[in-house]
Amino acid sequence: MDKFEEDILTIVRKAVSVYGDHIRGELIKLSSKLIELHRVNRVKVNHSVMEIVLGAYLVNNGYTVDVEEEVGDSLVADVVALKDDKRMIIEIETGFTSPENALDPQSYLSARIVSKVARYGKYADIFSFATPLHNILQIPSFYLKSFKERRKQEIIMLKNLCDKYYSQPTITLEDIRRSKIHSIYLLNIDTLEVNRLSPRNYLKSTISKLAPRTLDIKKYVEWSQHSEQVKD
Image (cartoon, rainbow, N blue to C red; front, side, top):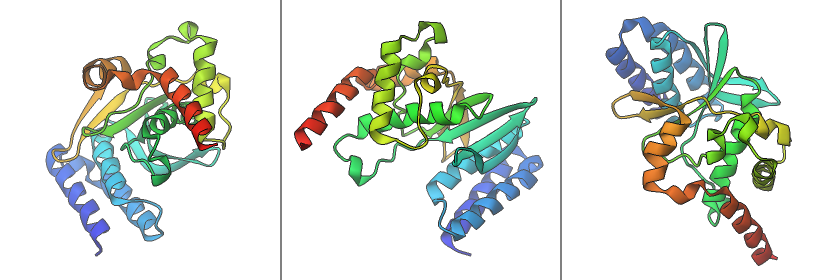
């Protein structure tokens, strides 16, 4: 048994001890799938552990859960949960950035959030994010507005930001206009606690207190353009 399998099975046992034996069968299915994907180098342990933690919470709350499921446009969703004939896609964001984004991590992470809501959201009745407690999601305040309140200039600005980092599949203005974040799941990996917040409460309780300037998308678009000019 390698370290990945050992860690995954350990978190499964821990989850069963927290929630009860009724979730064991479903978690074994999820863990087996992740172990097989790891053998072909398609998943990493930190991310997979979070999928099990979130999966345990959802199974305990009556959802049928799958992980690493293809949903369309060659997209693979982290977690897909079904309940009451509604499909929820949950993407887990850890705040990781590659060396290529060492000079613009905030812009990149903001674009990543927008692109995921726009691309994955159209394949779900409900789209949500999950993140560990140590990460701060770069969620634009745009997502607190109703569809009618969203101004065209805001949508164009978000698309320009996305287009800098993502070209396939194409993200349209309409994809962004109609995109919506339903919930934010906060994951405590150490204790397996999961708390669900609305985007408004998440921004109010977390980002507005710790890093209010992360919400200024206009600043990131302008800085992104400036950075390109500097490179030239």
